[in-house]
Length: 371
Image (tube, rainbow, N blue to C red; front, side, top):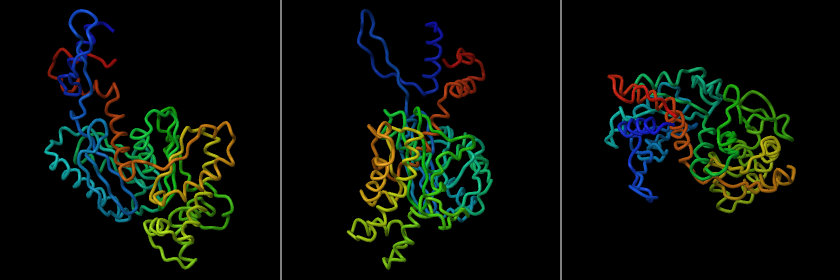
């Protein structure tokens, strides 16, 4: 590119606040060159992670780092209007607490605990979300802020959050969430794979070995979720006379040394491992990350997954494969949702559109295109 073009572009980005001076580089003769870097505080994004019984919303900078966040009990079965109105109210609260204007907001990302058609942001027949099927989630939120609203399933955004936070150097990663349900997020070539309509990674409803007659909440029988999810483990423990009603109860039992609970969680890991072994052969990831509330039980779950994956997959696929617990914990979803928006909003063509709009009255940068 011509020096004049680069100068115009840098000037436009500096004027927008997206770019800021970052010291000087070493001189190679003559005046030291000036460095520039992204200004993370220039704009804000929102990441919202909605689960079956929780809502977590964060106001983040342009690196995805949460600046303010709120986590509360939210019942997804209350329906889209009640839940999304809570999200809107929480965003307003966070903006007020951060003393920032709504004009600083460049996008909102939302993760939902069910299948989502990513192109439209509409949930598609989600089994635990009554009233949400086909609901216009982006449209509801955009009534309050005229910014992009991106929606995805919760496992995809957790995979993004874990990747950018803990494993950004890796190209290929499989994130498996084990909680009330089971799902997977697939990072390949550093990109999130959603499939044709956003249904990629729906491991929970893959047929599990040795479970042909177990009814799943999706209506089919023999699904992995029906025999290895948190709910399935709770049902097994209750039948065995061990009281447990929540995933937290299961985790507490395992950490407290309950043999029956530890055995049930490890067996669930083995069953999940049978399906993950197929994924390893198909996708050849560098890393498998196990997250979700049941993964907090410690090594029991992951040991079961490792036992089967390393035994069933070909040596070429597992020679350097690691299977590890998630490290981002409860923040994976909000960081991932924020990252989804940042990747969208900071694409070169969208930055160019934003600069052109800001200079619509005429100026030297209006016609400068993004490199």
